[in-house]
Length: 477
Image (cartoon, rainbow, N blue to C red; front, side):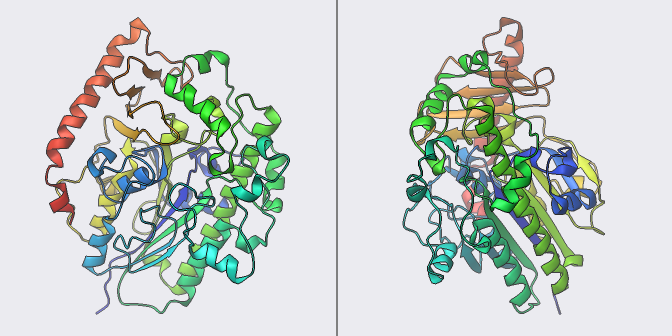
C-alpha cells in the first residue's frame, strides 16, 4: 500500500536577504514564482538563522540544535549527521540536489542520493573537490568562471564581486542546479515511498554572476542602498572594523571589498545580486511545474528559505559575519494549498531551525526530546502557537572574523544585543526607533537596563541549553 505521507521539498538558497521577494513588500524585485508561494502559502516574517555563515547555519537547521551544541561554529567544521537520517529510517526516499555545505562535502547525511554542487568559488573547504557542476562543465570542454580567472581582469578590484556570466546560460550554477532538480523529478521513476528533496541553490552568494540579459533590467532600476556614515563606522566594535579592512585586502569569494565604494559600484553590485535571485525564481517555477507533471504537487509541502543574508556594503560590510537583521532575518515560506491556509503572514519570532521538528511531525516522526528547535507546525495549522520571546545566533573566530573568539546575538521584538566574548564592547540596538541598526547604544547609560536584561537572557539560554541537550547525541541518533 503506498505511503500517503506528504512529499517534502525544501529549497534553500545561499545568502539571500529578506528584502528580495516582491510580494513581501519589495516592488523592485521580479519574483513571480516566489510571489506565488507567498500568496498561496504561509510566510514567517520574523524568522532568524542561528549563525551568520553557511555551514553553522545549515547544521543548526538540519539538526535542530544551536552551534554551541553541535560544535559547528564556522565553515569547514565537521558536519556529518542530520534529522534527514530520521526521515530515511521512517521510509522517506531522501535526495539532495545542489548545495548542503556538509564537511566533508560528500557526507551521506541521511540522503539516499546526493548530487553535490558546492560554492561557486571555493577555497577554504577543498579547492580541488570536483562536484557535479565541475564534471558537467568539463564534459563540455568548459572551465567555470572563478577567482583565479577573475583576478586577470583589469577592473577586478572595482567590481565588488559582480560579473556577467559569459559561458552558456545553462552552465550558470543556479540554472544548472534548477535544471538538474527538474530533470530528476521528470525522469526518476515513481516510488511508493514519500520523497524528501533538498534543493540547494548556490546563489545569490558571490560571485554575483547573472547572465547579462537578467542583469540588464536591474541596472535600470532605482534600488535601495542604506546610507553608511562615518559615525556608524566609528561606533562599530573593533572586530568589525578589522574585518572591514581584511575584506578590502583579501578577495573572499571573488569580492574585493571597498571601504568607500561609489554609489555606482554599490548599485551595480546590488543589481547583479538581485538578478541572481530572479534567475533562481525562474527555476523555482520550473521545479513546481515538474512536480505538477509528476503528479506530486497536490500532496507536497514546499518550503523556501535561505541560510543567511548579505550586507552588500550596507553598514560598510561585505557579505555576512555580522549580526544585522539583513544577515540574520530570513524569508521562510511554507506552501501546501489544501493543507495550510494561504496568504498567511506569521509575524511571531522564530528560529529558522524551528521548521525541522515541523517537518518531522508532518512525516509522523517523534521529535527528539533534547531538540532545541520548537515546531512551527501549530502556527501553520492555525492552532495556538507560542512565538519565541528571544532568538539567538552565534559564530566563532575564523579566517574572516579574526578579532574575536566568539560573537553571540540575542534579539527580542524591540531590542538586539551583540556580545563579544571577554570584551567590554558590543552592540545594542533599539529596533523600534532604529530599525536599520545604525545607532549603537552599547555605552548609553540610559539604556543599561535593556542591555543587562538581554545579557541575562543570554546567560540563562546557555545554562538551559546545556541541561536540555545533555543527552542530545543519544536522542538524535
